[in-house]
Each structure stands twice: as C-alpha cells, then as structure tokens.
Image 1 (cartoon, each protein chain N blue to C red):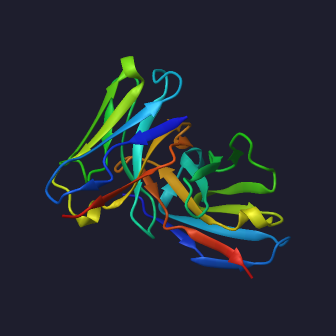
Image 2: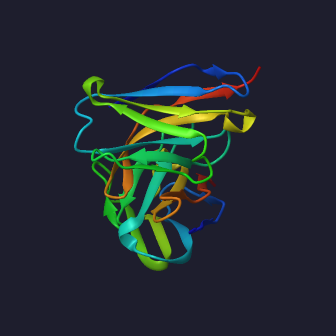
Image 3: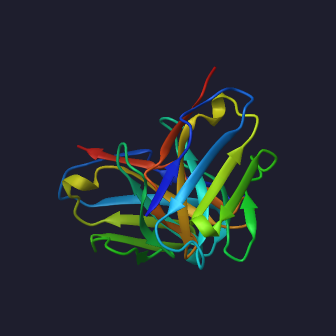
Length: 113
Length: 109
C-alpha cells in the first residue's frame, strides 16, 4: 500500500512537499508521482528506479525533485514556485511493466493565498 | 512526443451491453507499452490492462484489450453497474516518459 502525506494548502510561489510511505519494501521496484487537477485528466510528474535513475516530465523538470529514503520506505516530491495551476490531487504510484499497478489514495493540494 | 487521443469522449451504454473504447497514438507505438486504467468518482485510478492486452491482477475477464501500431481498444463485454467510470489509456515512451489520454467517460444510458 501507498500513503501520501503533506500539507493540503500551499501559498503561491512557495514549495509543495509531499511524502509517500510504502508498506513493504521500496527497493526492487520503480516509483513515481502523478497528479490530477480538479475535473481534469492524469498527468505524470516524475519517476525513479531503485538503481537511482530519475525521470521528470519536461514540462515540470525545472521545478521538480523526487528523492527517496530507503531506510524509512518513503519517497518524496518537491515542487517549487507553485501557482494555482498546480492545484491537484497528487498520487504516488508504483511502476511495473511500463504501467502503474499500485496507487495511493491521493492527496488534494490547493495553491492559494 | 506521442499524443494519445481517446474516443468517444463520453459513451452512453446500458448495463449488460458491450462497450468499445478507442485510444489512438499520434505515431506507431509498441503494444508492450500501452495500458488502460479505470477511475471511479473520488477514487484513485485502477490498472486494468498492461502490454495492450494483459489483464492486471484481479481484473474480471469481461475487460479485454487489443490493438497495435496506432490503434488500441478496450472492450467491456457486458457492462456491470460498477463499470460506469472514466477510462484512461497510457503510454510509456521517451519524452515525456509517460503520457495519458484525455479519458472516456462511460455512463448509463
């Protein structure tokens, strides 16, 4: 199971920070973040492999960092300089067979002053 | 960048009927990299199909995927009440690594 955690409200221009806690081992699998603005479709943010490779959506690359803490079975998302366009439900996911087979329940993050 | 287009935008179907959803890629892709998801209101998406035609764990056999090249199809053979949802296709590629289609909403006729 995956569980997202973090602030539900972030001010414009600040940094959005979320953590995903993985039940079971984080090693040997690939992981990532996906978001969904209210009433809209799914957008891939970024992913990383257990071997240390990280991949980001080019549209967000300058603002995104994904990091991992294997000792805590957690990985994190940081998105800087947020605007209202970053308001969305954020999901952490497991990447297997070129698809996302396990999803967290999602956490709503609103960007507003 | 590969763009996925899904049609129709909304599909109205009666329970028990067959539903056919289309996902078209802007250029030829490997079926190994094509997946389908179901999302019900207020819930996270659920993986249905990966590799264009392989059902994910626990997915009923009324869901099937097919296709190759630029055209892929998700078929629900006999719609159950719990199947009314939004369906997304997704491709694993180069840049960006993952792309999603805009979705098809299947609602009750």
